[in-house]
Image 1: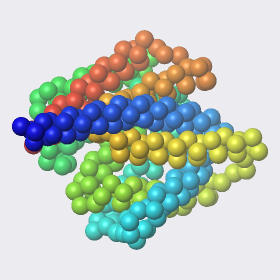
Image 2: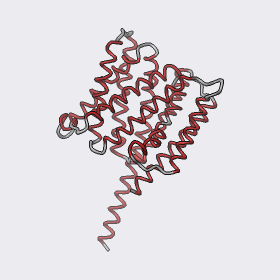
Image 3: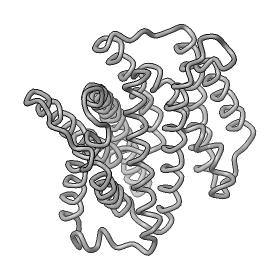
Length: 307
C-alpha cells in the first residue's frame, strides 16, 4: 500500500508538471504568434519601400546566425547538428521556406495582412489533404470533411466568378501551398533527422539562396528604415526562440491550435497600423477555415494517440 501511494503521488506530480508545462506552452505560443504578427507588419512596411528579395535576405542573415548559435551550443556542436543522411531533402526544405516567405511578403504588400492571413490559415488543411498521397498517412472522412469546409471558406474569401474577385488573392493561396509542402517535407525529414538538424538546415540553406538572389537586388536604405530592419530581424529571432521554448515545455498537440492566434494578431496589425478593412466575406470565410483547421489538428492528435 505505501508503494501504491508513492506511485500515485508520483503520477499525480507528473500530471501536475505536464499541466503546468502545457499552460506555459500555450502562453508562449500566443506570445510567439504576436511576435510573428509584428514581424509580418514590419515586413509589409519594408517591402512596400524596398525590394522583397533584399528584405528577406537580411532577415535570413539574422535567422541563420541564430540557428548556427543554437547548433553550436548543442552536444557535438555544429558538426553533429548539421550531420544528415538526406542533405538534398534538407536543402529543398530550406528553399521551399525561403520561397514561401518571399511570396507571403509579396502578398502582404499587394493585398494586405488581413486577407493574406485569412487565406494562409488554410495551410494545415492543405497538409492534411496532401499527407495521404505524399506521405502515405491515413486521413479519415472527418478530416476530409474539414478540408472541404476549409476549401469552402477559401472560396468565400476569394469570391471567384464574382465581380469582387481579386486575382491577387491567389498569392496567399500559393504561399499556403508552399508552406504546406515545407511542412510535409519537414515531417518526412523527421523520420531520420532530429528537429535541431532540420532547424539548422532551414536557416542556413535559406540564407544561402536568399543571398544569391537578394544581393543583386540591393538598394540603399534610409537611415530610419535600418531601425525597422533591425526590428524585423529581432522579432524573427525572438519569435523562433519563443517557439523553441514553447515546444520544450508543452506537447505539440496541445499548443498547435493556438498558433492560429497569428492570423488574429496579423489582422489586428493590418487594421490598426495599415488601415485595412475586414470585409464580411473575409471574416466569415476565415472563421470557417480556422474552425476547420483546429478540428483537423484535433483529429490528427487523436489519430496519433491511437497508433
